[in-house]
Length: 264
Image (cartoon, rainbow, N blue to C red; front, top):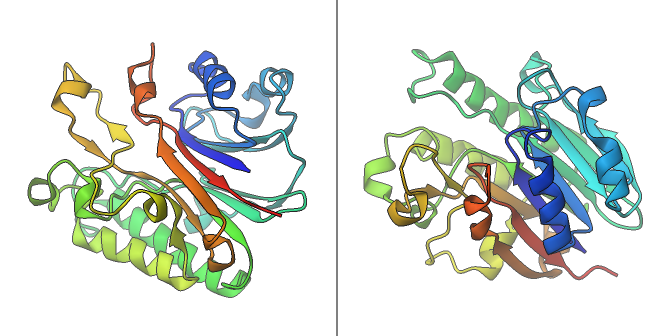
C-alpha cells in the first residue's frame, strides 16, 4: 500500500498539481493538509474521476483543512477538535482490510517561540499535548495505525538546513521537539521515513517562498511526517520525498512524502 501525504496549500488552487501527483506516483491513499476549503467546496468529483472515490474531508473556510482520498474503501473513525477551536486539523479513517490512518495538520505556531507572548505558539503546544492525551485514552500501541501530516516540527538536526541558526526559530525549538517527541513516545510511534532514510542524511519537505531560488539556497526543513505503530514497523518497505514537486508550476511550499508498506 502506498500512502502519500502532502500539504497542498489550497486544494482548489492546486488541483491540477494534485492530479499530476496522482498520475505520477499512483498512491493508494492520498492525505492532504491545508486544503483551505469547506467540505462542500472540496473538488470531490475530480478526485473520484481520477480513481479516488473514497473520501473523508474536514474543512473550514479559507484556512487549514485535512482530507483523505483513496482508491481503497475507507470508513471515517474520528475527527478530533483539539483545543476546541473547530479548525479542521484532524481526520481519521480505517482502510478496508488494513490499518487506521490519522491525518494531522499541527498549528504552525506563529513567529515567537514563547507561549506567554504568542498565543499561536501556546496553541501549538496545547494541540500536541491534547493529541498525546487523546491517543493515550482512545488507542493502544498494539493497534496497527499510521499517522501522517504536516506536523510543523523538524525534530532532527538533519531535518533543517542549519541546526545552530534555527534553534530559536519556530518549528525547531527544543520545546517543540520535546513536545513532538512526547507525542511520538506515547504510543511508540516509529518514524517510517527515517526507518528507510538514515537519520544522518539531510532531508527536507518544505522550502519557504521567500528565497528567489529555493533550490539553490536549499534552506529547507522536514515538517511533513509519516509514523506507524510498532505492529507496522516491519511493513515499511520504502520511503521518499518528491523534492521536484517544489519546482512545479504554482507549487506548494511543501512537497509530498511517500511511504510504501507491505501489508497482508
